[in-house]
Amino acid sequence: IVGCANNSNSPNSSASPANNPTISQLKATVTGPKGELLYLKLYQQANGDYVGEYTPVSIGQHRVDVYYAAQPVAGSPFLVPIFDPKLIDVIQSPKELTVGQEAVVEVEWSKCGGSMLFGDVELKVSGGPNGTTYNVVQENLSSTHRKFLFVPNETGLFKASLLLAGHHAAGRN
Image (cartoon, rainbow, N blue to C red):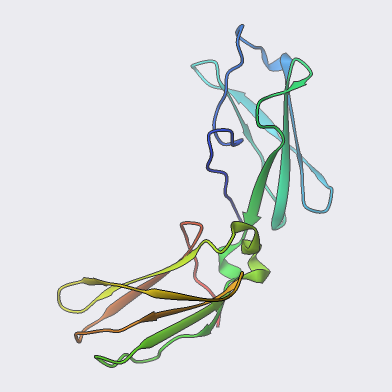
């Protein structure tokens, strides 16, 4: 299970309030997608910043509320989408490739929690004797259903990497 928070106000980034805060002035809670409270461990870094860690137990939107001196810090609450890339469904993929013929890979990711990622799914294809990187055209069928199309122009072994929010996704047939 993976979390994805990549902005400067994300709970993965550290922020240090003025006046050298102490851990007793800092409070953070994590609420799972079904309203469950999750254990959060706060650590002070060598530079005085704080980092919080938690282990999600389900996919879905998690809410992280962070308070300093009983006041919400800038950007709080943080919404962190949690997803499982192993739950992507590969609906169609070629068993063989033919030079000059379009190859289609079709995937659907609503069951993995990836619908919160606004369609951040991509396919990277490379191969042939020169390790050519191929242009892959995307056809959106819905917000969580996509076809990827490419045309191999040489013979050889090919590698296709399916990524969900930058994380490798094995997918399932």
